[in-house]
Amino acid sequence: MAPSLSTAVSSLLLLLLLAAAISVSSSPPMPEDSIRVISAEKRIDLTSPIVKVFLTLKLENDATAPEASQVLLAFTPTEVEHLAIVKATRAEGKRKKKIYVPLSVKASDLAVAPNGARLYSILLSTPLKPAEVTTLEVFYALTHSLEPFPAEITQSDPQLVYYRDSAVLLSPYHVLEQVTYIKMPSNRVESFTRVDPTSRAGNEVKYGAYNNQLPNSYVPILVHYENNRPFAVVEELVRKVEISHWGNVQITEQYKLKHGGAQHKGVFSSSLLYGYSFETFLARLEYQSRPSISGVSSFKNLLARFPPRVHSVYYRDEIGNISSSHLRSDSHKSELEIEPRYPLFGGWHCTFTIGYGLPLQDFLFESDDGRRYINLTFGCPLLDTVVDDLTIKVVLPEGSTSPQAVVPFLTEQYLETSYSYLDVVGRTTVVLKKRNVVGEHNVPFQVYYEFNPIFMLAEPLMLISAVFLFFVACIAYLHMDLSIGKS
Image (spheres, helix red, strand yellow):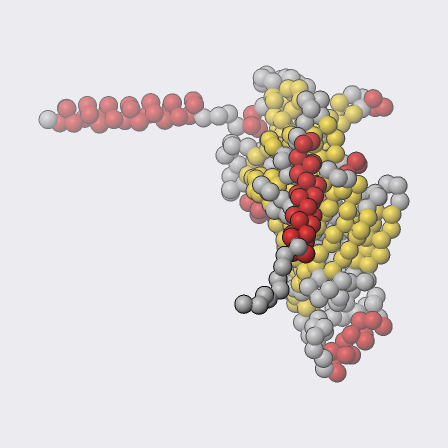
C-alpha cells in the first residue's frame, strides 16, 4: 500500500514539474533581453495645465538577438488614466539628410511590467537588426495631472500645484544613462524632491545623470510650484457640422466650460440676475483695479481658432447674444476672442454656444473612386483647453449613402438620423466620440459618402409643390360661395 502511494506522489510531482517547465518555455521572453537604452533624455513641460513630455531614446539591439520589430513604453496606472495622446518618430539618415519618420503607437497586450504598469508598443517601420542603434523621439500629453495645493484659494492668492513623477525613466529595458528636466512656468518653486544628483537653474529642475538603471526602476518625486495659467476644462463639447450641397457648411458648437484649478473661496458673485453685497462689490472692484495681483489664476477670455473665410459668426448663451467677442481674419486663419459674462474662478462653470459658416468648396472634394468626402478638423477650436467628452456630428445631405469616417486615432463611431426643414427621409449623421482631447488632436479627418445629385431637386420640388398647393387652395377659396342663402 505504501509503495503505491509513494509512486502516485512521485508521478504527481513529475506532472507538476512538467507543467511548470511547459509554462516557462511557452511564456514570452522579457523585452529587456534584447534591447537596451544607451541614453534617455526626458523633458517635462509644466508651463501649462496640460503636462507635455518629450522623450529622446537612443536604443541598441543585442548583437546575439533576433531583429526587433517594436519598442515598448511603460506608463504607471495613474499616467494611463490621464494619458491623452502618444506619438513617436524615428530618426533616419545622418546630419542634413536626417528625417523623422512617424511611427504607429498602440496599447500592448504584454503584461510583463510590475506594479500594474501598462505597456505601449511603438511599431518600427523597419526592424532593428542585431547590434543596430537607432533614435526615437516620443511625445505624450497628460491631462488632469496637476493637483492644486492648497485645494482652495482666495481671490488674491496665487495658485500652487503638485506634480508627481519619477526621477528615472520607467522602462522595461536596461537604461545605461539618463537625465530628466522639469520646466515650470516661473521661478517660484516652493519645493521639489532631491535625488542626487539634482540641480536647479531658474524655472528648471534637472535630475541626473543616472547610470545603469535596472528595468522597471522607479524613484518617486514631487514638485510643488506656482501655475497661474487658465485651467480651462471643457466638460462636454458637441460640434454639429451640417453639410449643404447648395454651398455652405454650418457648424454649431455647444460648450460646458469650467475652471479646473483650485476652488475659489470668499465673495465674488457670478450671478447676473440678483444684486450682491457690499463685500462682493469690493471684491469686484479689487479684481478690476488690480488685475495683475487679484484673481491671477482666473480667466476672463479665451481664443478660438477657425479656418479662413469664416462667416456668420455668433456667440451666445442661455440669456442671449454676448457682444464681448472680437473676430480677426486673414488668408490663413480666423481667430475669435470670446469673453464670458463673468470671470471664471476655480470650480466655476459656464455654458455657451458658438456658431459659424464656411464655404463648401474649401472642404468638399471627390475621391478617385467617385465618392465625395468632406475634409474637416478634429478636436476643439479653443486653444489650450482640455475636452473631457467630445462629440462630433457630421450631418450629411439627405440621400447620402455608405458613409465612412477616417480618423487618424481611435474613436467611438456610430450612425444616426437627423431631421431638418423639408426633409423627407432624414439625413444620415456620422457621430464621432472621444474622451480626453487636447490640442494635438486638432488634425484633419475625412467623412466619405455617396450621393446621387437627383436628391438636390427634392427640396426645391417640395417648395414648388407647397406653393402650388397654396395657390390652388387660395383659388378654390375665392371661388367658393360662403354666403347664407334664403330658405
